[in-house]
Figure (cartoon, rainbow, N blue to C red):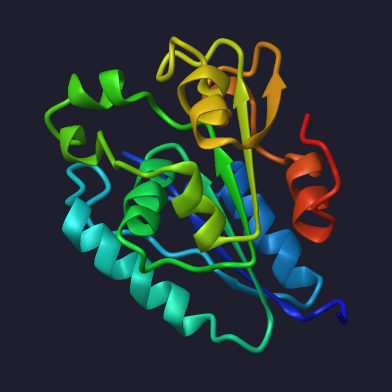
Length: 194
């Protein structure tokens, strides 16, 4: 594949208004500068998200990527259960997916605004059908996934998982502005995230 033969869809989480200092914004800029097609949308009403509305937007953005290039999806936080709902419904396909810092079902259920995102019903088979490569990366101390994402998601879904020590929710509050290893993974799926 040529260097510009990838299309990227980057999806943010709850209460994220795409601040310019966030690693997702940085990643979108870096990939664009390298000639890749990048879609980094503001999802509707991020403070009070509606699962059905976000699923519709996800499907529309996936379609807009086309199928002539490698399609890579990067999901952070609430976008992870969004992706899981989409794959459980059999309507989401990509070549590679990165799931970053998912909140646990228990945590989501405790917040009225995002409770509907819990309980996707996604299985390892759903994820394999949706993308040949899916990687999970999370911290060992994420307050939104106190049981640990490796245990909550990685093991039951059969996901290749990178656990980063002391990185909390892998967001701006945890110091994740520029994040070189996520860019490296986008360009080479063999890279481990740190």
